[in-house]
Amino acid sequence: MSASSELTEAPLRSAVCDAIEQAAASVDVSGLRALRVFLHAGMSAYWPLIKAAPARQVAAYETALHTLRQRWSPSGETIGDPTAAAMFRQMDAEAVAFLDMCAQRSGTQWIEPLDSVATYLVSVLYGAVLRWLADGNDETTLVVIDDLVGCLTLKAVEV
Image (cartoon, rainbow, N blue to C red; front, side, top):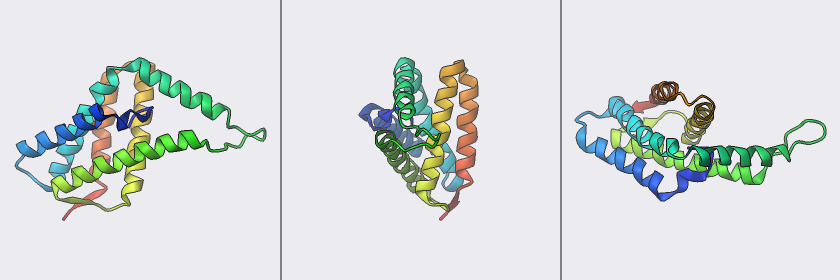
């Protein structure tokens, strides 16, 4: 869920999973309300880890952009980069696991294909991290995360 493949690093995955488990142990609701709590818990655990390493995030964006610049064709068309595509596939896979965990714990299910929901999540967070790197505005990022949680919740139903 970041500009790099940091989502695959154990501390991030562990922090997000632990936050969801702690939230699940402390809430007495289920369904969409619980889903919202779990999504917030996971993203709230994720964000401080991103903030703690801004230089790492910038380096990841720079590497990705450098790689992509080399992939433009002379006619201006983009030629996909296998390394960058693999990075996004990995982030998408981690997002699928996160979203699935939140749905299972809350008693909800996604009404859109989970891969599509995960792609949306990764895309918004990727842009939010880039925006934060540019302006350092924590409040804006927290608003984006809150709005993202609201949008994600609309893509699920109670089972």
